[in-house]
Each structure stands twice: as C-alpha cells, then as structure tokens.
Length: 493
Image (cartoon, rainbow, N blue to C red):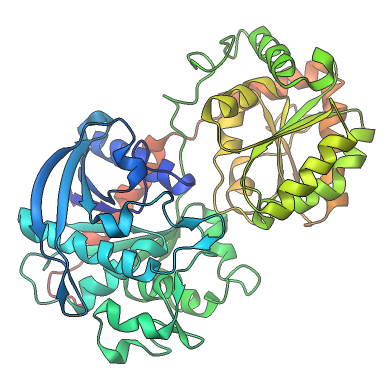
C-alpha cells in the first residue's frame, strides 16, 4: 500500500490528554508514521483536560449527526495539530466528556462509560462522512475504541465511503476490556444477534474489547512477548479462547520511545545534562535528587533505586512492599513516584515512617520529577506481574539507569541480563512473581554497583540501546500493507 490514509481512533493522546502509556503511543506513533509518508489523522474526545491544556483549538464543524438508540445527539468538532503537522479532530459533547477525569474518579469508573464510548466510536464514522474522508486503515486502540471495527463490519459494510477501509485493533492492556451490563447493549446500535457468545456477550454482560477482537481484520499488542502471553489461560484475562481463534491475525510490535523528550543530553528537567561520554553528569543529577528528596542526607555513596509507577497489583507494588525491608538491609535507598490504589498508598506511607530518609514516596503524577528520577537513580525497579510493553525501562536505559525487571512482556523484550564475564547486557531480570526472586535480582544489582568498572560499562550499554518510534512505525506500516493486500470485495472489516 503506497502512502496509506490512516485514521487513528484513540481515547487519549499526548499532548492533549493522558492517563497512561496509551497516550504516549497515540501521540508519538502518528508522527513517526507521517515521517514514513502515511497520511495520518487522529480523532479524540474533547475532554475538560483537553480544553484546559492551553493548546489552541479551531472550531470546524457543528451539528455532526451521531445517532444513539434512535436519538440524534449532534457533536461539535474542533481541530488542532500535533508536532510534525499531524491533524487531530476532537469530538465535543460536553455532557459526555467535560468531566474532571477521563474514565472515572478515584472511587470508580463513570457509570455511563458504555454510552460515552459508543458515542465516540460512532462519531468517528460521522466525522469521516462530514469530511468526505475515506481512510484506508482504521487504527483503533484498546476497549474504548474496540466497537469501531464492529461498526465497520456490521453497520458500514454497504457504505461506498468505507468500501476499502480495513481495521487494525491495538491492545495496549488486555486486562481492561470495557465490560458493561447487558441492559446497555441497545445503545450500541448493533443487531440483537451480535449479543451472543460468538459476539459481544461475555458471561451475561457485554465486552467491548471482545467485540473488537472478533471483528478487526488484524490485531496487535505492544510487544512480541505479550502477544504470545495473552494466548495462555494465565494471561488471557478470560479472552484467551477468542485470541486463540485469531492467532494467525495477531502480531506483536514493540512500542518506541520519544527521544526528543527523553534524552539526558538536552532534558530541560535535569539539573545537569550528560551523555554516554560525560557520565559524571549523572552523578551530579543523583546528588541533586538526593538533596531534593532528603534521601540519605545527600549521601551519594549508597545505591539509589527508583520506581515510577501506577500503584496497582499489575505493577508488582505488593512485591516491593513485601521486599523493601530486606532491600533496606542491603544498604540501598529508594524513591517511588506514583499514584493509585489507596491500600498501597497507605502501606507506602507506613514504610516511609519505618525508613525515614531512606525510603521516600511521592504520591501523584509529576512529569518533571519523573525525568529527574530517571536521571538521578542508579537502578529502576519494575517487578510487574505482567507488562504489555513498559516505557519507563526504555526511558531509563537512555539515562544510563539499569532496569531491574520481571521477565514478562515488553520488559523481557527490551532488557538483557548483564554478564560480568562478557560485559554484555543492560540490566537484571527475574522470572518468578515472588519477592525472593525480586530480591535476588536486586542483590545482583547492588553487587554490580560496588564494582565501579562494571557499573560504568553497563550504563554505557544501556545508553547505546535504541527503541525509536521510527522502528516501530515501519513495523506498523508492514501491517497496513498486509491489510492493503486484501481485495476490495472481501467482507472482513
């Protein structure tokens, strides 16, 4: 397929909205694809946080028709551009998207999320019709947009505008599926027959992600290892049977890093910039981070570990909580930045009191501090129960920070075990999801730290690694070309 027209349908994207890694992908991948010659456009909801971002938006369309349960709920559409000139369209319907959070409050998900994302998926098609824009590829992301492939197949199969459109669904995290009561099914506008075990039905409820897995022409996850792991009962989150039936259409493409933002040689958030040939600057960043956080009374001699994470069981926070006292016994200091479940916040606060000046927990999301942590720590801990890709380990390596990670998903695909005999590798991995396994890997890191020559060599190994979005974009272009090889009369969406 030459210069395909690609419509990204995503529920969040930097710099307009963000709750997690999906936003990083949806903000960086379209730009990389455009550099490869793709005609990429992006459609997003117009959230309150989007409106308050300080970005200038141009009102473009009024009263774009969107039908839900026989009622016309017109949308307004605004426009802005990403860097590199990628056009972005924003669907505005204030009673659905003008809220303090994207998907729910700390107390739970918004009860009308089914309606909110039915509406968003339908609005993507209405927008295309209003613009007379016929995408070759409809690239959808996660459960929030997973109904779009179903609509393409079942509601728009006879449309001349979408006759050649093919769909790709990228699964960023299979655990989040968009499961709603069966009573919400009429909102979808799909035929009653689709509410079945071979369709959207899932244990008596409806499952948006399942609908997309069944109807998208091709599927992919955000790392090769994760694409294999989700075929197992342990990691399939109840959808392993559906995925097994789509095995031949399932691919894994590793996410990339935006090295324009994550580069210690030009990072405006660092107190001292550095590079692979000027690593003394990293020590200066460590000293400044210790001073800022009050760790170790500014003493730089002890190994400094860090973690930047959502506070959730997926991220292995329970392993950290269990293993931290023994880590303190190894003589390490630790800083954690994150927000999430209250049970973990409370336990981490207790550990701060138990190890004052040695363990620091900063609750919240603070981008400049995240950069300073990557620049100042020696080791980044990521003990995830599962990790579809992970980006922090990729960012950390560019900063000469060695990852200590569980060998799962994208962590396994990006981190190589360091060997003192060959001086090859970039970090330390452990297999079992258990604190004792994590602590063995931490002990290896501490012993490496005490050997300055090996530590310096391992840091340089990390900084030589490259996980650019240009590499990932070429792999996505390969999937687009695979989709483009379909004959126009094939029925698959």
